[in-house]
Length: 429
Image (tube, rainbow, N blue to C red; front, side, top):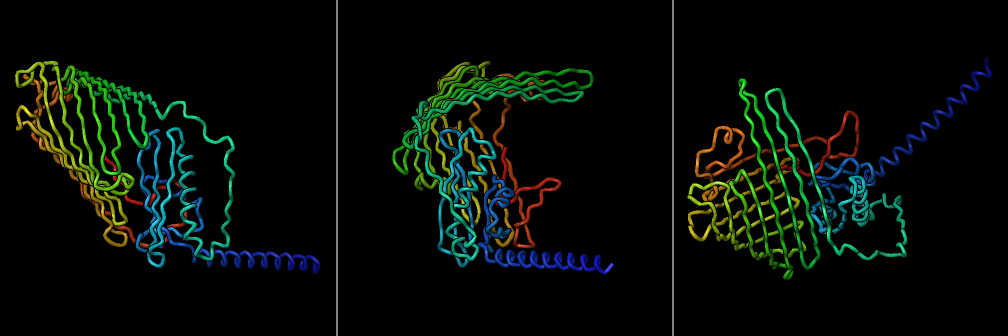
C-alpha cells in the first residue's frame, strides 16, 4: 500500500509540475502578445477569419482609432480579368508617419483559396516594418525562395483575355413560372498604354402566370454587342471610342447602332485610382436606329445625334468612402429630349464604432424616344415586356452601424457558421 501511495505521489507531483510549466509558458506568451502591434483591417471583401488564423503575431482591434496600424485594402480589375489589391498600411498613434504600400495581383483562374493565401503573404510583408519595432520580432523568421531559372515565358496571347459565360434560371410555384437564359462573350486586351474591350450578350426570358384560370404568358429577348478602345495620354488624360449594336423588345428597338468618340480627364493621377478619382468624361454619339413598331413620335427609323458629360468622384480613406456621380445628356435635334442622372454613396466613420451610410439615386428622364405609339396590352404591362412612359425614378437608403465592447477581435470560433468582419459592406443590385 505504501509503495502504491508513493507512486501516486510521484505521478501527481509530475503532473502538477507540468501544469505549472505550461501555465508559465502560456503566461509568457500572453505577456508577449500584449506587446504586439494593434491592427485595424479595413477590407469589406476579405476572408477576415482566415487572415486572423494565418497571421497571429498582431492584435486585431475592432475600433480603428485604437489601432497602431490601419490597413486599407482596395481593389480594381486587371486586364486579365483578375484583381489588383492595393494594401495601404497607415501608422497611427505612436506609429504615426510610418506608412507603406503593398500590392497583390490575382489572375482570373485563381481559386478563392489562392487569392486569400496571396493576400496573407502581402499582408505579412507589409506588417514586418511595424512588427520589427516590437519584442515579438524575436520570434519572426524570414525565408527566401530562389527565383525560377526558366523565368517568365513569352505571352502567346499577346495580353488578350477571352471569356464565355452561359446560365439558365428556372423558378416558379403553382400559379407562376419563370425561365431565363443568357449568354455572353468578351475579349479584352489591357496594357498600360491602351485598353480594348469587346463584348456580346444575349438574354431571353419566358414568364407564365395562372390567375383565376386565366393563363398569361410573355416572352422577352434582347442582344447587345459593344466595343471600346482607349488610349492613355499621360497620368491625367485618355481618349477613346465606343461602338455598340443592340436589339431589344422591351425598348422597342429592332436594330440600334451607335458610335461615340470620347475624352476623359482625371484630376488625380490614374496611378492613384484605387484610392481617389475625379473623372470628367465627354462623349459625342451618332445613333442610327430602326424601331420594331412605330413610336409615339411617328418614327419607324431615324438617326440621332447626342452628347453627354459625366463627372465621377471616388474617395476611399480611413474616415470612410465617398462615391458621387452626375451624368447629363441631350439630343441635338431637340434639347428638351434630355436626361440627368445623379448617384451617390457616402459611408462615414464618425467616432469609435459608429458609422453611417447613405445611398441616393435620382434620374430626370425626358428622352424616351423609342416608346410605343400604341397603348401596351395588359399582358405587356403586367409582365414588363414593354417600356412605359416615366419622367423620373429614384431610390434612397440610409442606415447606421454602432459597435461597442472589447476592442480586441483575435479569437476565431467557427462553430455553427461564422461571419466576416472588417470594413462596412454596401451591396448594390
